[in-house]
Length: 144
Image 1 (cartoon, helix red, strand yellow):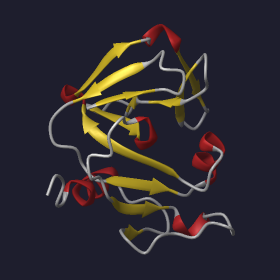
Image 2 (cartoon, one colour):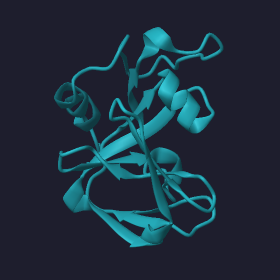
Image 3 (cartoon, one colour):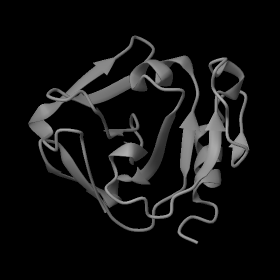
């Protein structure tokens, strides 16, 4: 499956079975997206490949370690590696095909915006679970 930014300059490919999505409702994700939540998936690094436009990628890293990669031309959020782990975080809205993905988890529901209505589907976490637990939820019934 392919994905690309709004202007089409940065493009990537994802192979293999895809996990389900999560939505994060924290204040950082609201600011990064300008929306109520950030919908994303996490894939193994070996299933991710840049196709073009890597020279357009700009990164912003907060002193807390929070990282946001984006296209320097159109500003779209872009995939980035999950720290030292062998996985990539991918904004779901960049995918060219919906691949029947479902939201399996909602993170930081306890700090969602007052105007945000969280869907009833998916496990809801008041904060964020540890990454291993989250990955188990996202991969459960993936590709089914």
